Length: 310
Image (tube, rainbow, N blue to C red; front, side):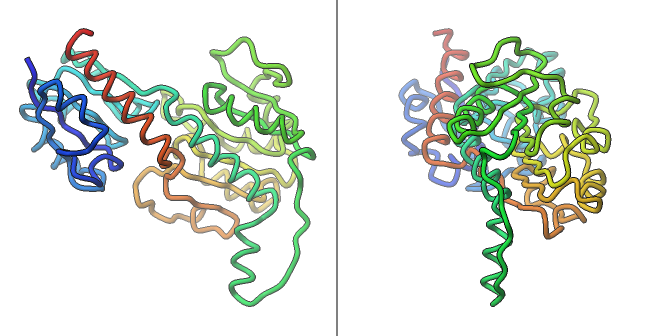
């Protein structure tokens, strides 16, 4: 029964996939490893050339569209090494009988810790201070401590809960919005989305984008924020309307937009992404040793279980 497994996550193809220790369970089960391009996200044309005779796929963040799935005649399972599956055409996968698995929660701590770093960096304006001193300048900007602010968490899954626990330990107030959550830990107040924006000095996004393709955070939401607020996006670029962020910069509603999620990698630096008040990180939320190991282990385990029925 063993066949071929395509491996495309950059964290796995950066090393030799044929000998990568995290893929040993697949080799031990008799599967042949087929590697995507080394250390980079594959293009659509490359994927269509690779998928022809694969039986399983450990996938990264690359888009997997209906045309690619149509080229994969033997494919039975796609196992993501992350929590989301919005890069996959799920309707096309279902129509072709292809099972989709995700490594839910595996990278939660890594993403949460980056979000916390971006929150602290934005509240104290650390990146701007560093740049100023490197340029020979000297100026001090009064910052804010976590205990001075309310942090609103949009999406209260594993990542949001890690963020909430640390903010509470630092003395901050936490409110959260998640339409699928009805109970929260002590100290976290569940509110609707409008209330969250109205009371929060920091909003951090940990949710998938709306199914209709509209931005979750636009002018209406940003207009509710207190003056001098901070927006953190380690989830998806499509969650935020960039034109609305520019308006919020102009009227002082936002002092910082910190973002680790982009529509393309590397991103096209539009007016928001090139703005001096925007803090950019190159999609490193889950890119820690521990997170990539947990995600790869979960992806391999999910794939083997789906293919072997164990």
